[in-house]
Length: 102
Image (cartoon, rainbow, N blue to C red):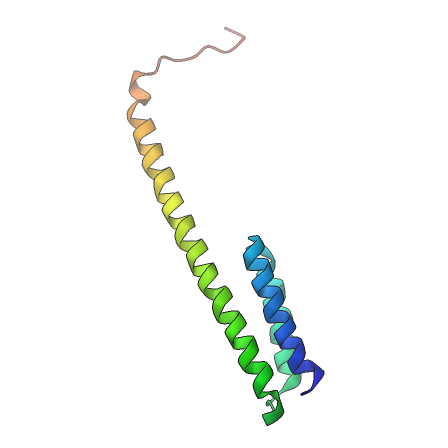
């Protein structure tokens, strides 16, 4: 197996670590590196099979973690929206607050 195909497995592990750490903002840079590597490697030889299967398994697990994180973020966003609506309902009752200048 060539080092390039092994590098794909390393990148998959790094992706999983970033997802586990919640560093999702770093993923696009990693994906760009992976895409450049794939472009340079070309068609995989039969000897790359094990590396490709390992990378796919790792990436599949981290993709499920990203989906869960996105769903949790959507739920939290929905709760914030509900909270804002509820708070806005009380807006008419609040008295104007004067600042230090009167």
